Length: 100
Image (cartoon, rainbow, N blue to C red):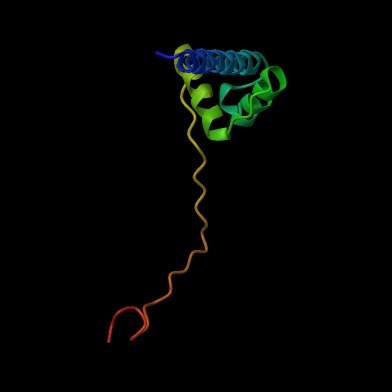
């Protein structure tokens, strides 16, 4: 393993530990203040940036939040999959969709 590979592995390990600490902090505060289900992944994003200057997506924050919730025996959170209710699918028109 080269020096660069070792440094990259150390950086990834450090980043992972920092993000887990941020998620632990958010969940600890959340259990004291309110219900665990009210904790948003955006809180993990904010703490990670504020403490460690790490920019992460809400999807990644949700993964770390779920890791801490699972470790503590709380139910997992799922990504919001909002589906618009006004979707209209146009009917195929003769001659334009491969039909003759």
